[in-house]
Image (cartoon, rainbow, N blue to C red):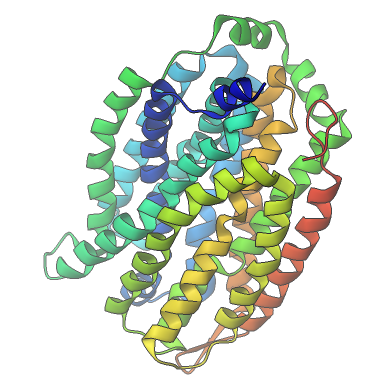
Length: 414
């Protein structure tokens, strides 16, 4: 019995290679989204825009991702998942390249919208592939590896992106353009890794999905209370998180007194810690229970949110300490993703994950857009950021209640 349990919990080499390859896509995808936040001060200054304009720039990606996610919900089961992933990734790289060439605020806004059409569904397809290929007993660890892409993007990608943006300011057509051009080029070898190492969808899962028509997929999502709870779970999580994320870097510069050159340190230190804590959170989630780990992390998450959104000028080491704690406790997304994928029947999982991703992207976009109206610039200072912090804390506490009501697809508690 113990040998059987060990076998179920042991991840083999093939799974690891697949997960690292999918993680590479997530790295490029997440960095593309994240790089907008620390570039905020540069873009606001370069284009002479208001916080609400920057909020729209961030939310345009999420709004277009919502649209594409809804469309994908209706068609994803008509395609083999690996092939669909590769096609979407190509479109994403083209959109990212367009961001790197955008000369004005309007063209960048359009390019971000196009990028979101493809990038917004990448995560859903990846989660569907992982959920099909990795048993639930090992899925916490699998999600930890996939989520580690966020850590690597934070510790390497974002600081490097800011570095090349600041170091190329004097070159006429680089500066803030450089990170996007770098990402588009980096994505090319990643595409070929996907071709080689990501397996095709199993015939049984593929046939079961093909046999379901569109209305069966939609009914399967909406006629199940547990699925609706899973959707609500994601919306609450994302709205709370992305209410504060877009203005984190601008607030640190204008209110806390950090230089733009100091911003990479936030991502370097915080992301560096999560390189170790993300896999650990995944393992602990598998060992002690997804719900228990989520509840602990969600409660602890409240502390750094309050401190960050009420922060006054202080020594940089204190800023880095608080922001690092924020990054670590944001690891609550690891057990959350494992719970959501486990709550849905395999036959409708791809459609559900696409729809779930689109709803979450809409929540991101709405949160970022509305946050741009809550936060105002008065004499070079951003005010009312604390209001967003209280909202985020409320959403974190609400997410704990929703998580406690969620059940696995076979009716068990997490």
